[in-house]
Structures are given as C-alpha cells and as structure tokens.
Amino acid sequence: DQQVKQNSPSLSVQEGRISILNCDYTNSMFDYFLWYKKYPAEGPTFLISISSIKDKNEDGRFTVFLNKSAKHLSLHIVPSQPGDSAVYFCAASAAGTYKYIFGTGTRLKVLA
Amino acid sequence: NAGVMQNPRHLVRRRGQEARLRCSPMKGHSHVYWYRQLPEEGLKFMVYLQKENIIDESGMPKERFSAEFPKEGPSILRIQQVVRGDSAAYFCASSPPDRVNTDTQYFGPGTRLTVL
Image 1 (cartoon, rainbow over the protein chains, first blue to last red):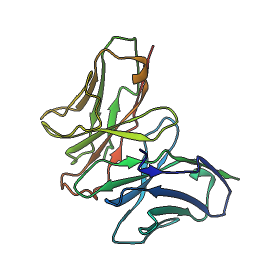
Image 2 (tube, helix red, strand yellow):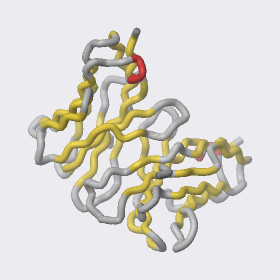
Image 3 (cartoon, rainbow over the protein chains, first blue to last red):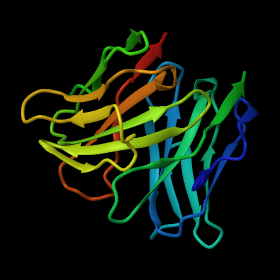
C-alpha cells in the first residue's frame, strides 16, 4: 500500500520557467512533509519542509504548498535552473513516529 | 561540520556472505535511521536507533538483518547470508536529539550493495 504517491515519474521544463512537482498521500495522520532532491550515486538532500498547521512554506526559489483536504502537496521551483535536474522525493511522517514514508520520486530535467 | 558519513560506499558480496554497513551521524545528532532503496523505487524505512537502543525496527526484515548503535562508534547495519534480492542502496540518516518528529533527517551518501 503506497501511502505517498508521486504519479509523474518524470518532468521536463525549460530553464527559467516554473517546475511543479506533485505528491499525494492517503494517511490522514501525516502531519509533517518534506521534499528531498537526489542526484545519482548520492544521498537525498533536504530541500524544504512543511508542517500540517501551515499551507505554504517558502525558501528562496522553492515553495511547498499543502492542501490537507485534498491530501496533496506540491513543490514549485521558480525559476528553474539546469542544476535543478535531479530526482525529487516527497516524504511524510505522522505524529508520534519518526520514520519517513517516501514517494517513488519524480525525475526533473531542466532544459537549457 | 561534517555531514552523515557512510562506509563503504560500494560493497560487493557473494551470496551467503555477510555485509556490514557503517554510519556515523552528524556531529551532535544522536538519532540514526536506516533506509533501503531498491532500483526504481523510493526509500523504504528499515530501523530507527538511538545510542544503545532500537526504537523502531518495523521496516526491518525479520531474518538475517540486524542493526546496532553502540555507545561508542558508528551505527552498523548487518546483513547475514546475503541474497541477490538484498542488492540495493542503503542510506543512513541522522537527526538531533530533541525527539520531535518535525526534526529533519539528514542523509548520508549511501552504501551500494551488490550481491553476486
């Protein structure tokens, strides 16, 4: 049972445009959500997180939006840069637990 | 401030051998987590440890896998009698000692295990 889903395995975007990566979850107990970026042969790098008491968190070019009623979160990257090309994972955890449940990832390619 | 360190980065074992994967958390972190990533999949939680304690091993296979985080030294993930299906990337993460589930986990570079 995949509790965190990233339904788009890949996404291509032109440099300078907006990249929107989506993530859906099924467990209403999740209250903390994160996005990680991963390059080949490296570990995931933390990008941005959001608690369920918020609906938006922004850090530079990265913004995460949370829609609790739809059980949906998205990561916006504006403007997209070629160095953003990587696999992006969303992850979630529930209060009282410390393990992250990861989606299967979306491979973002930013075209110069 | 050094990040999470894992070694070896690559490990090749023949079926039936033992694999030992090491993880040193970030300085000041006392919580360690192990995740496994199979090809084309996301990371799957295996175990969460604090010094000398296993807190949650719900993702760990019941047989052949064990983990420890001794008072001194790195955390060790041990896989006995490896099989081809154990081939994967194993990632370790660490977080600060405050025990809040909103503490971000920071990941190491991973150990890529190949079982021949």
